[in-house]
Image 1 (cartoon, rainbow, N blue to C red):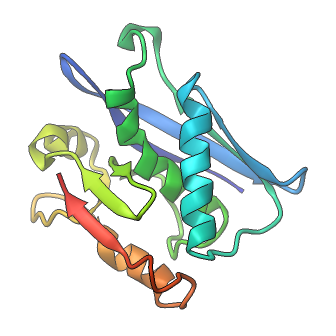
Image 2: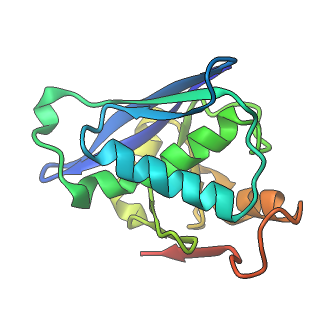
Length: 176
């Protein structure tokens, strides 16, 4: 299985569209994140922790997630890379067939994760134009009549309703 998801990297000039692409194979099981240099391992471990602590069943497959960054974005900064955490988690869960979506193509997501389950999303006004220009389906908890919306809370509730999460980790979706 393979797919791609759109997100952005926030620069001083504003958000720059980037593509996440990935696949799963019946190879040595595990999660691999490429394209983020020294930040890849930290994000991978956070995603694995969130997934395991909520007892979300992941098939024994190899999952490879890639971030397509261009040189014009400059050096990566943790304050900007953090907004890729939510889309990478959604991408991983999609490839693991946990999310009830038929495709991620033409979808856009951006947000940070805390190990306790808090999701922070960027201000809608920062990504509005990108989503409108490219006619993306926005995966977000922020309500909008302007865009096609996949409501993040409902999407995560579909996973939680399977009683896979422990009681101490209730879903928390926050807007930053």
